[in-house]
Image (cartoon, rainbow, N blue to C red):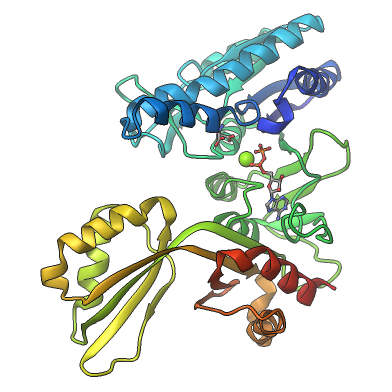
Length: 402
Ligand code: ADP
Ligand code: ASP
Ligand code: MG
């Protein structure tokens, strides 16, 4: 007997037929004598539909009320799945975040898990019930409903696996595992049998939404092995863990794109000490995360500072900078949301100096212009025009993997 945590994403439970398919996966594992705790996401596009509904009523709704609304999607899924499992004749109970003691911070829409007090889940498992847990949602110290950020059900699953000391944490989705690139954009992408936490963390943070980056962070901290697999195919998936075999001796694990970013340029700022400090401390106060940063070579006692932020933060960023124009003394500000970031990730990059040249060669051959470049030990990213993003992914992927 094993204690298993499974998580099923939105597309896996999108309609009645898929709910019964998943119910069968869950009950088959239960029938083998395993204890089953199952985390579910909202069905299909439910979360996006709820956001659209909110926008019809009040585009500036408070984050607290948005959380109240968005948490409904996951509650629907667990109730419907419980009904399907009841119909198959198995004992089951569905529980919301507050019922499983998913205690979080009060940062609505992006809450952090503080503690999972999972006594109720353990009691239900002891009663031999299949326990269904609403993903994505938690409760703060005031008893208010919170959510963990988009894609947060993955994090719920890992947190449950840690709290329950589960033997296995399986993330079921709509592709066979983690690929060298999004298989919907690059059909030639190869499924990876294994990937390290560090590489997965980079890929997830750089736009590969197959796993939420916080879930990988959490899994790495507690050494929880994750298996990413399909709820449709029954094929073996990808194992995310500390050390992998790397039989093929590849030094790049994958290619990712992020289209949800904006480039902000502050033109003609004074070329004196303290300018970067002023700009980025203002943004830090607003909790705006800055990613790539470029400062131009000074000329005529002036310099430009260019950086990227998440596109959702671009308007606020512009507001804050403009409000401080007198002290920052820039000539003008330029915001471009028609950009994308394409990255290659691989732990083996460190020992292979040719990676950057190889990536740039592929982009050059595809006539794609690079606006910005950033590197770290295991990743290399370029900022390009958004319309070139898919083409860049295919070109870069072909360069490294064919
Ligand atoms: P779920 O609803 O199950 O959480 P997501 O849509 O969040 O599923 O994540 C699965 C999707 O991630 C896939 O359909 C695929 O298009 C996309 N994806 C992006 N990059 C990758 C990658 N490197 N490997 C696998 N899938 C990827
Ligand atoms: N339903 C939420 C979302 O769409 C959480 C999740 O699917 O993981 O982001
Ligand atoms: Mg997801």
